[in-house]
Length: 205
Image 1 (cartoon, one colour):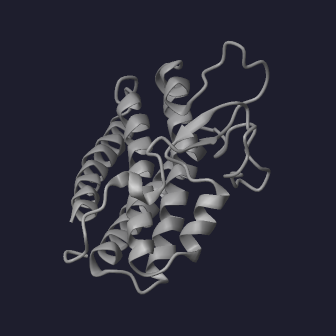
Image 2: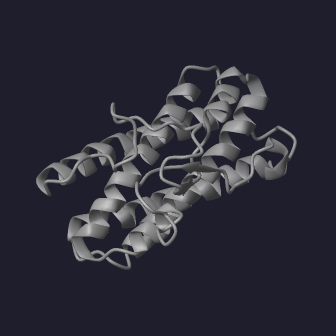
């Protein structure tokens, strides 16, 4: 992609604040409205549980986006990033799933689909948003895109997705007393911050 024309992030047609209604039940008049504030409203292990329950589907969508890229004839830089993201996040999903099992907590919050999936197009999953999550239409558009258009769309979407993960990881670092949770959150911050810089540079040409 190094020879491609510079392109502003806005040209991807994707706002970096793309959100997905995520989870929760009951009276939401005083409930947190987004994933970060949900984690911030809890203490100790409860915050750790919320972080894992929210980050698992967030990571799963990043892996799905990586798989879409790997199934296409993408630019070398995008392919390398997709492989890197999949290699990092698949084990983190397994690690967080294991934590929830050991903590006696479900892998999904109330309000998620019974099969554990998240309805990316839903606007009513407890009234909570998770920054960076793509809608079903976003994912369909990405799947249909080809060539340089795909590469630019994928980079813009993944930057937004990573920024959502960074917000959650930085928040749990302010609450957790668990060394393993801290280590994973720090790895997310370090790895995804570096990947955002790389992707922004690719979009800028």
